[in-house]
Length: 422
Ligand SMILES: [Zn+2]
Image (cartoon, rainbow, N blue to C red; front, side, top):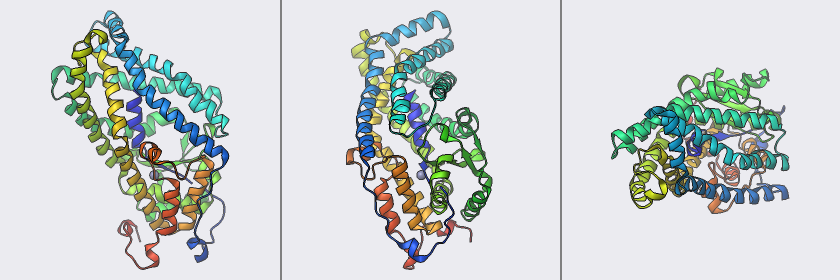
């Protein structure tokens, strides 16, 4: 289930920024070079401990499904499910219910530390324990509902087409991801936070004017009360079709100056106008096919070799779920640099769009400085960290790009000028 959530995460492209009255945009102010600030002691510590946690989480992603599998525990869960469920669909549903709850309980102390204790320790959160815990229970409920509603489909395909199930499942992931992104902003996200129109109407009017220039309907800009969960800042584009929207965390509205916020909006509008959400759906569906094919090629041999330990003979047995998850996690780890190269490319193009539509390099670079400082980010992470963990270009690279990219000053053509409404 974690993999499904991870893939879901990839689909939400993100960036940030906010507002004080500072509208005088002199030539001097837009061309001044912005230095990448040195990291604070606290930020260095946050980065180092984050690297350790990443290694731990990665190992757990292999270890936990392997334990379910090699101890035969997965087969025992299937036995319980057979006793209670009797019919094929109910056996799968009950297995998924038990498996999801057990995973939730195993990960609960880790999530508590990473998402609650650690965030408070670094001064990045005001979240109450009650909010964290109820959000965790809501997340569990969503996982169970999604799992029970959809996971029987690959198992049906495994039974009906043992040689092509990976392809059919991968193709079906296109409508699945599309549906997930379509309904998430209206049915899932509001379970956790309150979404509404922007509170600052004067600022909203300026954002709508920029949206108009980018060819976006204004009603698509939302504000969310993330300050109940975090002090970090962010903004993102999500939704599909009718639910497509730009969402601003309320934290970014208080921590960025107005001009800085407008450059963040320019970036988000770039994602929106350049169709990054639908492109990501196709890209990650293709990745799903690749991962499932790799799992298919390896799983048969593993079952042959370890069937006595696993307690099942066929991949179409629902007890194989941890095997499929283990293989997806292993192959997913191998191809992560490729996935993130794709997301970093989209983010870079959104940065370019934001600069071209605002032409405010100085404010854009300062917005990234604010991001670095508010979110305790490392602007120049090590190469391994960048390849495996950075979904966005590093903040150092983004600030450098803001300082350098100004083709309009030398009469060079702009890449996205044709998309702007004049
Ligand atoms: Zn972005």
